Length: 416
Image (cartoon, rainbow, N blue to C red; front, side):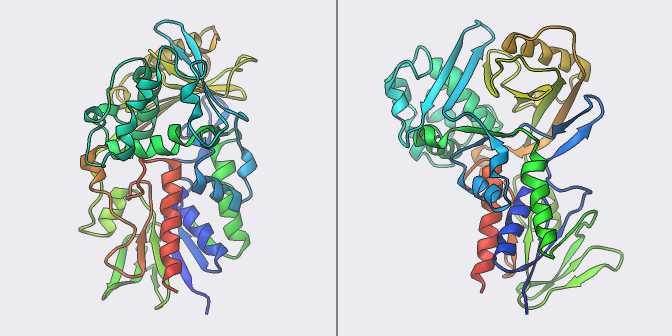
């Protein structure tokens, strides 16, 4: 008989596990508590701007092997677009200075030897000072491992690690920061080409996966929230969705629990999970980008950190945004719009806009919270965990989410 795997949660970690298992011949049944798939990685129509926008502005890199393999498996890799060369333009709003970091297309970080391709006012010695991050343990602090000052830190390391860790870099886990450095700056330009879903996250990473699963006879149920597990010895024996809706699990069936940490801890009492989180603020403005606008612009010296140019809109991301979650929306939109005008060269009154504040966007990537991340296996032999909050070796990123789903699926496959 065909074995069944129940995927609890239709975020990108759950979908990546589902697709991997469906491709391996399993019958997959996805159960999503909300009315849509994607979790934090999704798009929706926004009435304020009259545009389809993303819940958050997510950036992938050409070296994100698991995320790209996932996109390839659902036939949408071409939907992730970016420049042919790993180049990152920056602007400093406090000085008006502009520069371009050019990582080239090598597999090695040869760019650090070329002054014209480096961050302005930096030397080779500055980059060598980052070396301790490469072998740092997850219990170490970034601020105790590398210098957190100077042109290189202010113009590259701080924006990079802030976006990846979603905490002020000095308080972040040096081990997690080191993983980012190893897979980006140290891997050369070939691994660092920026990629974005120009037509929206849902159309590239979510909807095609749901369609693929359904076209192959698998089920994806929405508004189907798991309420409890029924345990039988060392395995999960039943899924209880409430109101008498229960599913008994056969001996060879398995479950991948791919829900946020708070929900996972409720379903599995005693499960250790991160307990502290940080906010991310995303803002979207309906305006035609300048003709010479780059797809992604790094911004330092202001409120905004990354500026994304999409058809008919400019969008920004502000990480570690707890300080902004209670700021009046209009005031926040005006402040962000001021930075956008300085950075992009657009002008005019505030256009139609939308602010998306995710209060619990990611776990705190500190040593303390990283130590609370569980692995994929549980005390139940047929129950596995997935999610960017599990111990992936990376901070909470799309690549980490997909890796967690792949890893959970591989553990299911290993049971054969």
